Amino acid sequence: MKVKCPICDTVDNIDSDSPLAKKLRNRKKHLYLCPTCSERIGENTKKRHETGNFQLFEQPTKEDPFI
Picture 1 (cartoon, rainbow, N blue to C red):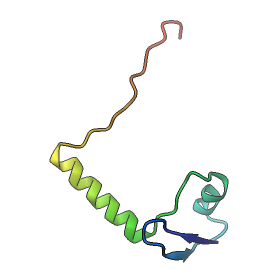
Picture 2 (cartoon, one colour):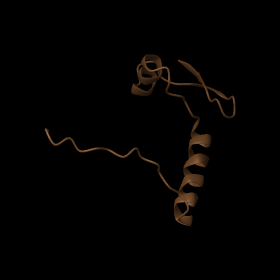
Picture 3 (spheres, rainbow, N blue to C red):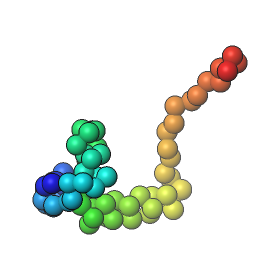
Picture 4 (tube, one colour):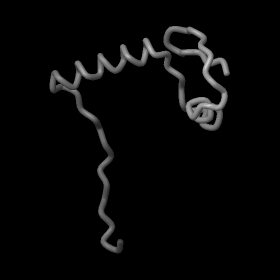
């Protein structure tokens, strides 16, 4: 299966029977990232975490008293 990285536009071949290929076929919102872009984004995210200015915004959950 041929896949294309949306960041750097490189085309890679992955095994058609792999779990990643199945996820990309069945869920259109998932994107393929090449290993170099994935590693670069991971490093930058870790750097932002270390600065202390990184915040994850989660929706407040309300507890249901009936559950």
